[in-house]
Amino acid sequence: MVDKPQSGELFGVPYNFERPSVGRMLSAYWRPDEGMLVEKPFGIGYTLNLSNWRSWIVLAVAGALFYQQRSGDEEETTTEDEPVEVIVD
Image: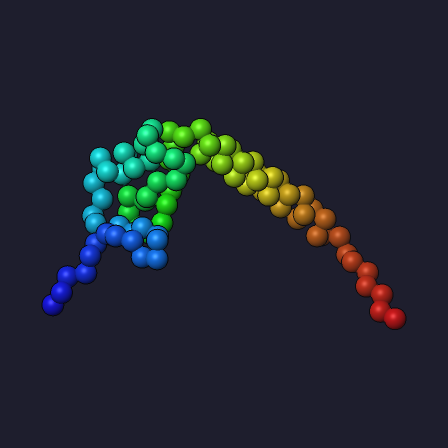
């Protein structure tokens, strides 16, 4: 039986299913010489390079949007308790 490759590219998207080591996991997220996106140490696709300042902006925006959504959910639960009148002509 032919062994399938554990890493490579499929339609331009990288994949890697080799068993990850601690060193590879840690070094995958901090690569100063590369751009904002780097290949994932395990799985399919790309992840953020935390040594790039643009990645921190993306994380801050995502965190702010998550916080805003959570705050909005709390406000909606208080207004949903009120009865609603529906008029049909």
